[in-house]
Length: 357
Image 1 (cartoon, one colour):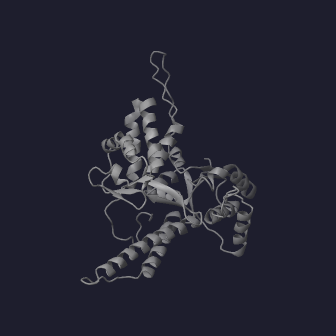
Image 2 (cartoon, helix red, strand yellow):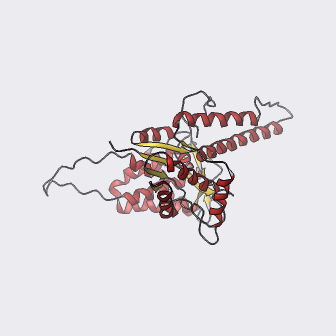
Image 3 (cartoon, one colour):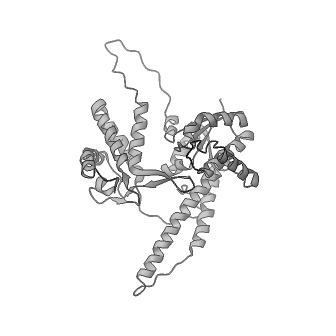
């Protein structure tokens, strides 16, 4: 039996896949799954920032209603933050075991990162007007080089939606990876994992010319267009001050969408865009909420994302009208990634449930 390939994912893969366990459990059957400690630390930091926001909101309520109500805290932010940090790290350790790729915290690593930034070596951008953003991307990449030099499989698949740091520099990074580790690496978008999970094609029976069914169109590129366009409705990619990739949801839904609901949304999309034609972004509830299920997040849907979704929808109707139902089904599945179940109790450090996101 051939050796399994290694499958490594960037932080944005975790953010986009709320059912992370389900995706990884399926991939485990075919691949050796790895996560970097850089990604774990980033997720811990993001969870703690969300927690800080909750404490800040509670503090505002405490001050706002001080004249007629008393609000007390059972724990301090520092206590709860420490609990989260230890708990999340333990969750990942329990799931990945020794497949967590560590990084070195020393002066030599820092010097290497600074040198790469000064020389504009990937994952840093080589553009003349580029900033020095990309510290964490570089740290993640160096940790992978160091790990696979002496450990792991001979073939590695790395998925990320970070174009500026990784996917636009694929050729350079693949060459460096081979020179350092004597191994190979493929770099793909996050959605590539779905291709990896496809079942192998079965033998196609032969037909006479009269019996031969109509050949299905090759829609690989268009599938990516649909995924990208609909993903752009449910969240926005951006970079923080340090150049770290971030992703912000535009809405949550308390009830999962069905296909008919999404049909209604797309049917009215052109009209909605026209009604807000000079606005740069629109709250999701103005477009997607027909019955009170949709709640806006702090980020609105960019007009460019809405226009891209409209173009894809119109392309389906013009070129693939016989598959319009399949399009609505696919769009529904993507938008339902923003489904938010009723709040549960905080996870326990010793609980063996799902990974925290």
